Image (tube, rainbow, N blue to C red; front, side):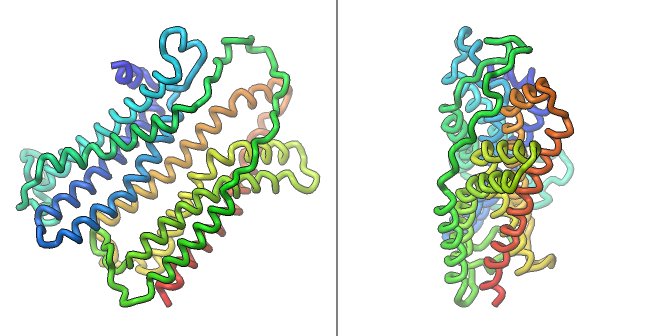
Length: 394
C-alpha cells in the first residue's frame, strides 16, 4: 500500500519512467508468450521453441537493467537521515523500491497477456480481434502454469536486481538536516575516485567476443539459434560472441570514461576543463557501464544493417520488437544513469553557484563531457561493428 501511495504522489517524470518500465515489461512478456505459443503449436520442434525462448532473454536483460536504473533514481526511495526516525531506514526503503519495481513490471506483464490473447482471438469485442492468429498459433492451447511462470520472470528478476543494487546505497543527509542553506562545505571538490580496474578485462572480453564471432561464423551459415521472425541466418557463435562483446564493453566503459576525464584535464587546462574532467572521473563508474552496453547494441545494429540491409524479408515483426526493446531500454538506462549522476551532483553545483561560478561555465562543462564521450565511444562503436560484420560478409 505504501508503494502505491508513493506512486500516486510522485512527480510526473517519475511516473513516466515507471510507465516506461511497465511498457518494456509488456514487450518482453509478449515475446515470452509468443515463444510459448510457438512451443504449444509445434510440439515436434521442441529445439526451435527452446531457442526462441533463449533469444527472449536478451530484451529481458535490457529491461531488468532499465528497471534497476529507474529504481536508483526514484526520489521516494532515496535514503535520508530523517526518514529513519519514522521507521523508513535503508533496508525498508530498499524493500519499498523492489516492491515498486515489481508492481510496475507486473502491470506490464498483465498488459502483455491481455494484448496477446486479444491478437490471438481469445478475447473478443475489441478492434483487431484475432489479427495475428496465424503468427501466434491461436489453434494451440496455452498451459496456464507456463503462462504464469513466464509472466513472473520480469517482475521477479527486476525486483531482485533492484534490491541487490540498492542495498548498499549510502545514507545521504537532507540539505536542511545538519546545516543551513547558506553554509558551505569545507571541501567543495573532493579528491577524484580511484580509477576503475575493469578496462583490461573489458578489452580482453571484447576481443574474445569478436574472435568467437569470426570463428563460429565460418561454416555453412545455417543458424543454430534462429531469431523469432524471418532472420534465420545467424550462427550460434554470433550470439555467444556478441554477448561476450557486450560484457566486455560494459566492463571497459567505466575505464574509458575515466580516462576521458583525465584527457580533458591534460595540457594546461582551464577552469571549465578541470571541472568537466573531474566530474567525468567521479561519474565514470556510474555512466560508463550503460554507455558500453549502448555501444554494443549500436554496433550490433550497424553490423546487422551491413549484413541484411533494409529489405522487407530480413526482419520479422517479433525480431523488430525485440530490437526496439533492447535499443530503447539500453538508451533509457543511459539517460536515467546520467540523471542519477546529475541528482548526486546537485549539492556541488549549488555550492559552486554560491561561490560565484557562472551558470554558463557549468553548462559548458556538461557539453564538454558529452563531446569527450562521443569522440571516444562513437569510433569505438563503428570499429566493433565493422570487425563483427567482416567475417560474416567475407
